[in-house]
Image (cartoon, rainbow over all chains, first blue to last red):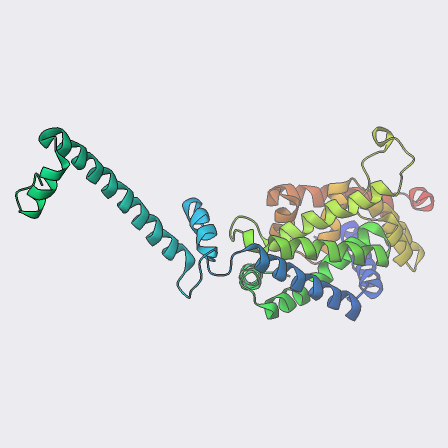
Length: 127
Length: 190
């Protein structure tokens, strides 16, 4: 059995909702245009805040690579280029370090750089 | 009524906008702006102010686009909350001379609009009765009857369970029925 009080209330709410719908504001062309202009501004701000060739790298280390990548010209993804450069620099640094230690060891062993050089040229060096 | 697919579509469009697709911004604006404007209008009771708020809400959405995480929150739920907060901020600013501690928590569905739109004595009384409901009951009734949202959708926006929404609606209806049907003297006094 339906509750007449509830039914009356529903009818009254429906009637009020119809009035509300009739009085509702509609989105004007001006408001719509303004909102789209804001969207364009936001998109432009975002473009300017992200380096052009470093986009798409979102991890924490990627953030650093993105910054480095943004500084580099070329069509390659900036992050990848930056990673290669960092790897090369690291490799050279390590290699140089070992070479330096090898040189020091050689000098201690032979005690004469000239002799060491001679030995190297003759294929009898310490290496 | 927005179903899950429509909600997902909002998130997809937002992602497209974040990738630079301006057409997605237009689609999002067409889908979301009317509801934001209506919500702000109901709360503020003034179309010009409601338009200002709607612009501000959409600007926040555009700026949020690139960091939006799909699945964590629904776009419409987030918009509802932002709109409500901005409206409450405006209502607070309307009373610059009052000590903030003395100001009661502002009603967030404007009695002025509800009263203004009522064209009959009965509607006027009902509108005033709705305006006097506690905030959450009023919001639930407005979403259910004026926005035609389902109970799960209301639950999402009010950040509560569906059962809690049912309870809010039931209590609101009881209160309204008591005022509207129960006692003619109460109607006269509304």
